[in-house]
Image (cartoon, rainbow, N blue to C red):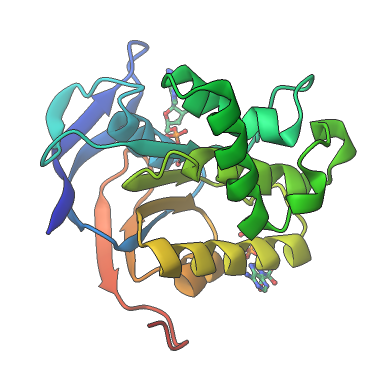
Length: 219
Ligand code: ADP
Ligand code: ADP
């Protein structure tokens, strides 16, 4: 089934910058799709349009019904004064889940990220990779159908990045949330994705749509 459909999406910012010329694509539910292209080509804009953080100048994002989204940015944007558990529990509490239950679910979301022993740690007590894991746990705690990731690992060293790639693949394999992953790394797109949408230099437009790029066995 279709998770979402981009219909002739275009975006021109008020200052006249054309970030996105016209993009159409249908995303299958449960797929892992990378948006790959050079820095500044408009990838984040596509993701922000999908998340509803920007309005398209033309076209639309079509959803089959109400859908829960998770979003992971390059900067983990954790609350500095709150523990890992409290950070992960926040979206649940905002959705009206009782404090105790939100805390329990947050701790359960930290476990598969290898952070069970860091549930009470503050962000500054964690490494960059661990903070990113908290951020992923926070994005997934409410069990979204669609996970949007905007160059999440670009600031991490390549060992940490490689571990996070594998953690993400494991979670995706278990739960099959539809994933849209923005990256400028060809390596990462090929390693992670089942489909790569390659965007050309700004204004972004689709220059290639590649299915099953990975030479590694996947399912
Ligand atoms: P990418 O994610 O591929 O690096 P972006 O989507 O962030 O690219 O940006 C695409 C282009 O739009 C860039 O030239 C960027 O400077 C510009 N841009 C992004 N946001 C705004 C904005 N709010 N106003 C004006 N220009 C913007
Ligand atoms: P950039 O962000 O500069 O495009 P790359 O993604 O090309 O960086 O990665 C830089 C280096 O890290 C390359 O040598 C690449 O092979 C390595 N690398 C990136 N992701 C992984 C990964 N998941 N596992 C192992 N090596 C990786």
